[in-house]
Image (cartoon, rainbow, N blue to C red; front, side, top):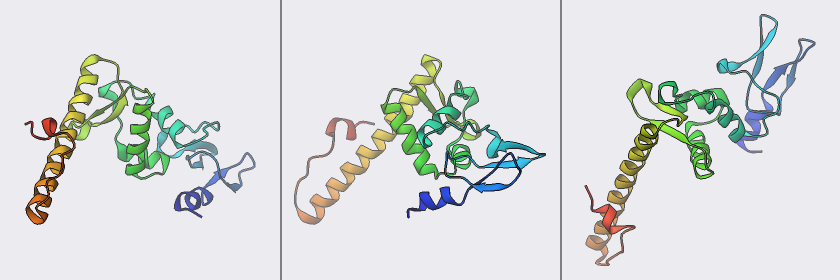
Length: 164
């Protein structure tokens, strides 16, 4: 049994009778609060989610524009996933065509549905910065390999790796 499966199996939901039952469904824990089922993290839990990706997208669609961003930590908490898994799901959603933006503005940073061209450009700027860091690291590894082993390697993308 995987760690993820064991996390799902330990969840419970409150049934109409008030008893707690094992919950194998979507990644929302439902608890009784004042006699009414509510989802932890402040998000109402629709019963129809088939997987983590749908659940994450449902939450993100309520965060329209940069001013209403939600952090990966909040998403991870609400979905009971690691922040790494949240980032992976968001990357898959973007590759799949979703307009999900990212902001790194201190406490106001996070993920959101892109509404404006300026939000798109800010997200693209963040991606370009990360790409430059990756290519710089690759170039450094190639130089170190050449120094230690005397063998030249082709960098990932020399023109990007050498840009500042």
